Length: 323
Image 1 (tube, rainbow, N blue to C red):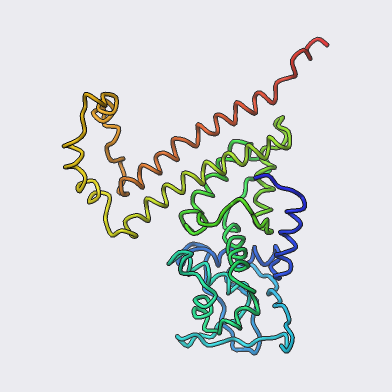
Image 2: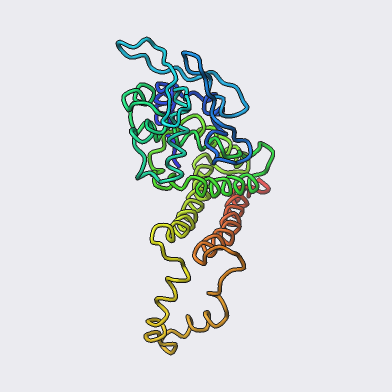
């Protein structure tokens, strides 16, 4: 991902305008974890006349201050959801509610009204904290990126890049809706920028130029996103169609048996006879298992390629010896 300073500053400024600073993003890290995950606790409830700090995790952070609008008092009171639970209104709780909705039903189901209903507030009240769906998506993405562990400074470039790839892979499976958001126009919020910073640091000092560092990081990120796209799509296929992999293949076996000519496709035939298309040793659906196997096979090879680039970068320039 090529990053321009102007883009970085614009992204950070936009989140700052929304009142979503780095501390708030870190404090909401466990809020974005799926229900029941280690480190996640329930959202706070309050009976006071003002929203409490979003203590959805064990860290403490100051609550985000909503933008004061004309005619408003600058404060808000907790509302009562349809279940009778009082929910404090903050940008943090808005983001968490939206993430839970998107995790459960996908981005197609996400709307300001659905999030407001989930919180037990009116849509206009929600817009006091988040102006619209575009801004809500920005906040959601930056919140979930705080879930990723970041490469340590002394981890080494290969371990750092592998950690980033595996953390991305896991994040895409926890929150598949991320794959529906184009990475081409990154918001560069505080968590995304911190993650990019730590990943660049992992490949610093191994002889790469600045542009090569960005390209090396981008190669691993794009490989992982592409592999995850296939795996997530395979996992969602049965839920979307109601047809399992086994049912899908069985329905096509008669056509395949009737029209496939081994003499015309001898290589495919030999590969099939070798067992290459057999179900991997896992309880997952076939296409899901194959997508995961493909990711596991490809990642070390991508990193091997990065090792070659790093080794070439570390070589002394031609003609420099003895000079």
